[in-house]
Amino acid sequence: MTPQRIKALIESAIPHTQAIVDGDGRHFQACIISPAFGGLAALQRHRLVYAGLGGKMETEIHALSMRTYTPEEWAASRPP
Image (cartoon, rainbow, N blue to C red):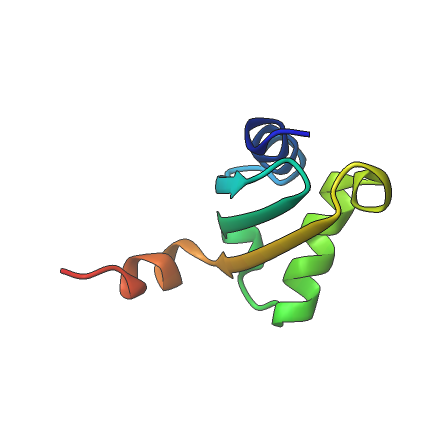
């Protein structure tokens, strides 16, 4: 599994989503920005991402650390 493949899986599973993914082939970090996260708690956001990755979390991805943002949260977290 590559970071590019994880990015593609997340972005295709959750409409209007941008994912920035890095990793070493087994351990990955992702920053995911999506309007679909609006009104969802952190656990619900992570479950949405896990659902998009399907069974790959159990087989091909050993660990995925993620930060999730709505577009508004992402804009507010960036320096001016």
